[in-house]
Image (cartoon, rainbow, N blue to C red; front, side, top):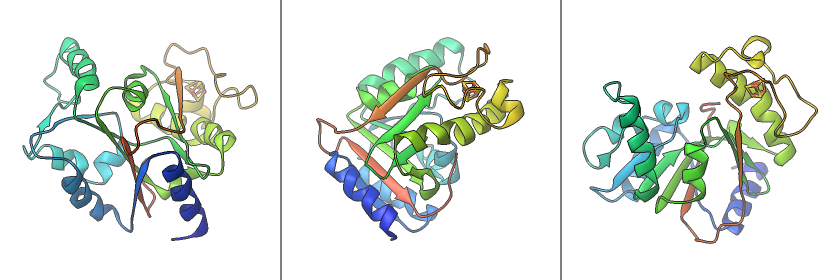
Length: 213
Ligand code: SF4
């Protein structure tokens, strides 16, 4: 483990978040299997990392009560029902747009369902991140979202914004909340998770690989 990862883990722990460091993405599912009790109600936020690490397939094995918001058979009302139920769930899994060396999680949402569940509701939150998500501080976290996470998520979701075309935010200088005026804008709600009141409610699993964006 290098000094940057070590410092990040120490500061996440200081902020009352539990941490695990894994060498490879194949180690994620066994760890998560040991953390989540059988028959727990489990919910997810939108995440490429959870797919890349095999977590989504694992959740479909039937060991838990998995409420899959991405089930193609769901109606819009069905998706909304799952998003609302998330707040009373046992476990919520997602990734983070950035993790600072200072021990903070930084996330930006379009609908805020993911960041609201990180902040409050589910009894346990498990966040899986590759080391590519680690940045020095919040300024770098904001920059990371504007130059990496948002443009690539706009591509993935086919949101035809400025960053979809140019690869970076329309407003790189105006600060965190500044951006485009597109109806397809995906940056609408912003969350910094710093010192937690419930020690260990949030678990951050850092994997020594490039995962998601
Ligand atoms: S505010 Fe608009 S242009 Fe800027 S990163 Fe978000 S979606 Fe892209």
